[in-house]
Length: 311
Image 1 (cartoon, rainbow, N blue to C red):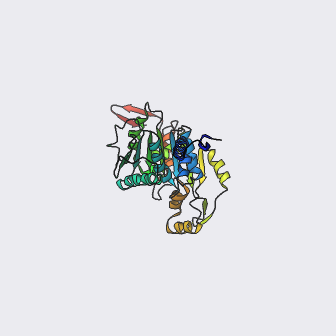
Image 2 (spheres, one colour):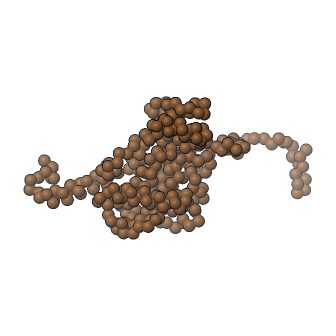
Image 3 (tube, rainbow, N blue to C red):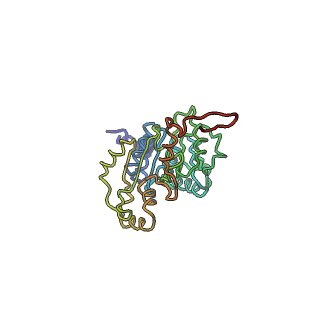
């Protein structure tokens, strides 16, 4: 018999103790929290939640359009802010999207009947009675210095945020061992810090793509079995998942006919593609600058006065 089953407790005490047990369980396990809100996290979302629980500090998520990225970018700030005094900084590429980030966080908050009443709220911030503060910002780096000891930093649509912004934000992690950085985005070309981070070993990398492949740039066929796909990607250090939201083949085939194959690969298959009009590929340029053993075309060079004469 548990304490809650004791016949000597009245109903009010039982209810209070039951709520305390529930709150404690939710505080220790965000997956339980979201499930108690009537949400059923996808496997990739559960993986990210567990990575945060395990102390992973740098989480890089490459996700297809409409794969459920908002669950992480809005749900985790709402969860963390309730259970501890925390500063959350969200960076979005536009004022409109920054406003959406706060609205999405409020949607998670409104699902929770036991969530503390907000002390302050506006289009770009939320303040809780426990001192937690969620602030959504545009991606300009010019006004983003000076924030102290954030608990959570989220780059929403990270592929189109400034390189300079990322450089401005990372010093906030100095002497701040509990801060988690989440970069989440659909790809946007082989450029920028988000693309570079995909290859950096410090990030826990996640990929969530549609379970289809393109044939002859116009037809869709089922992709390889998920277990095979996951094993192949894990060799590259990437934890890969198929998106449960992209099973409608007819819709995706319409998307493929409306747009180019490269656009589809970027938006739904999480491929970092290059613009059609780009003269030199990113990898070609990178290789050109990566070799230090290339000899000059003319080896005999004689310096004369202030100039250089090739013999």
